[in-house]
Length: 85
Image 1 (cartoon, one colour):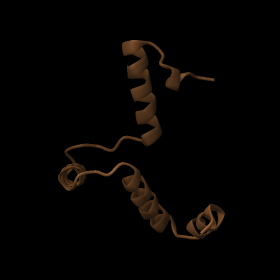
Image 2 (image 1 turned 60 degrees about the vertical axis):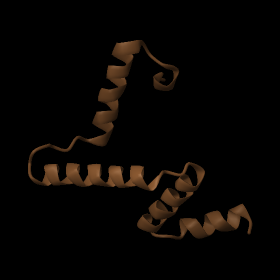
Image 3 (image 1 turned 90 degrees about the vertical axis):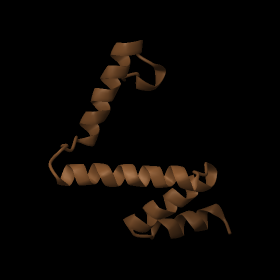
């Protein structure tokens, strides 16, 4: 099957189906052990429960990236992957 045909079919999937497909493809490139996957699932479940219980608050994704970038730059200088245009 040609790559273009696969891509065309994949783009017709729903958002959730494409996300699941992407996850499976990434997993095939860098497999994760079942114990590590279980640990990450448990961590995500704990964080979601803490959020729902009001113990932690959500952080806007783009704002979190800016905060992380600023912290990295402040700590080690501006790395090549954070250069601004």
